Length: 75
Image (cartoon, rainbow, N blue to C red; front, side):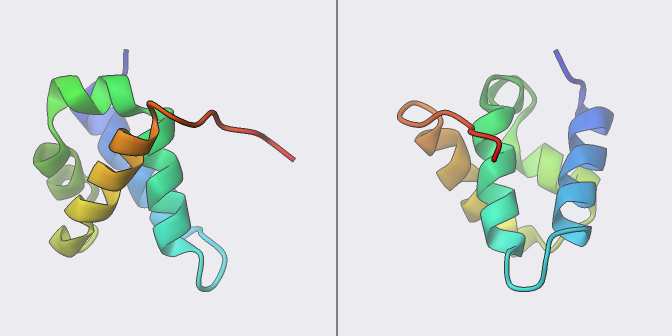
């Protein structure tokens, strides 16, 4: 299980290192990949820890919700 600091760092890295115009996609992917840990720690807390704009809480939530229906595929 990832703790709050780890989740915040991962989200920050995924957001800041995303290809141009793919930041929201990377946030959704973060939510899908770490959904179980995010549910335990809290979306607001993770986004605050990551230092990305707080408006992205909704996007992390979408990823968490999608995690019930999708799996991550690496190409």
